[in-house]
Amino acid sequence: MFIRTLSAVVVSVALFVEGTGLPAAAAAQESKMVVTLLGTGTPTINIRRFGFANLIQAGGLNLMIDAGRGAGIRLFQLGLPLGSVDAIFLTHFHSDHISGLPDLYATGYLGWKLLGGRSSPLQVYGPKGTSVVVEGLTKLFAADSAIRSADEGIAADGTKVIAHEFEVGVIFEKAGVRVTAFPVDHGDKIKPAVGYRVDYAGHSVVFSGDTKYDETVIRNSEGVDLLVHEFAAAPSEMASNPLYIAILDHHTAPREAGRVFAKASPKLAVYSHMGLLPGPRGLPGWDEVISQTRDTYKGPLVVGEDLMQFQIGDGAPTILMRGPEWPR
Image (cartoon, rainbow, N blue to C red; front, side, top):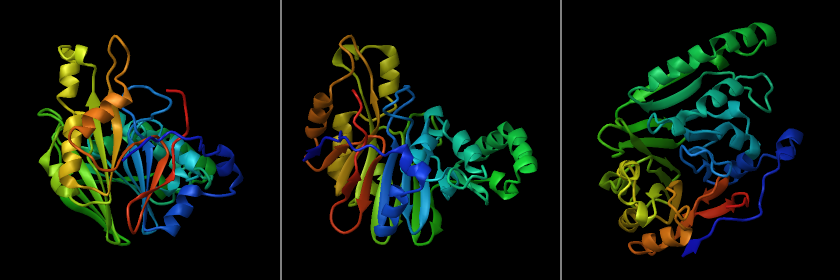
C-alpha cells in the first residue's frame, strides 16, 4: 500500500489569529500521540518543503525533533505558539537541521502569548557540541532579549536556553514520555549524529535522522508504530558526478530504505528529508523512487509532506491532516 500525500487541506492562518481553534494541540489531547511533519526538506530552498523538523505531542508535551528552516512558520500554521515547545532534540549540526532555532528561540520569548509566551528556559537536547550551538544562540540575541526585557517586561527566564548534552541511550523522561537517542552513520566526518525513538503509552515513533543504511536504526525501530526515514536519490546518468557521489554516500538510497522498512516492520513507514538530486531531465520521478523502494519493501508507505499529521493509538497510525497541495 502506498499513500500519495497531496490533498487540498490547508491550515488557515486566520485560525491562529482569531484563536478559534488549535488543531495540533486539540489532536494531542484527544489521542495518545500525534506526530506532525513540520519540514520534510533538505538544504535546498523549497517553499513547499521547509527544513527538516518534526513535532511530537504526547503526555501534554510539545517536543520537536530538529528545527530546520521555517519550523516556526509551520508551528504558526498549526496554531501552536512558538513558546509552547517544551524541548527540542537535535540529531546533528548540519545547517538544515538547526537553522530554524533562532526563530523558535527569539519569537518564543515574545510576550504575546498567542505567538510566543515562553516564561521558562528553552530546553535543547543534543549530542556533544549542543552547548556551543546554544551559546551562539544566546549571544546572537543578547541585545534583543535585554532590550525586550527592559522595554516590554518579558519574562527573563523565557530568554534563557539550557543545553543538555548526552552520549546515547534514554536521555529524556517526563509525563510518561521517554526519548531514546541512538547513533547513526551519516559519514565518517559527520559525528556525532543520532536518531531518536519516542515512546508513550505503549506506542512509539522513530526518526532516523540523516543516515546511511544502518542496522542500528533497524534495531531501534523493530515493530514501532511509525518510522520516519530519510532518503536520497539521483538520476542514473548522474551516477559518476563527484558531488552527487559524495552526497549519496552520506544518505540512504530508496532500495536501502526499503530494506530498513522490511526488517524493522513498522506499522507505517514515512519518507521525509527527501534528497532528490536533479539531472539533465530534472528531478527523479516519485514513481521511480517508490518503485525502487518496492524492490525491497511491500508494506505501508507514505511520502511525507510538510504539515502532514499522524495519530498514533490502537491499530495502525492514521493521517489526521495531509499537507497543502502545492504545484510540484
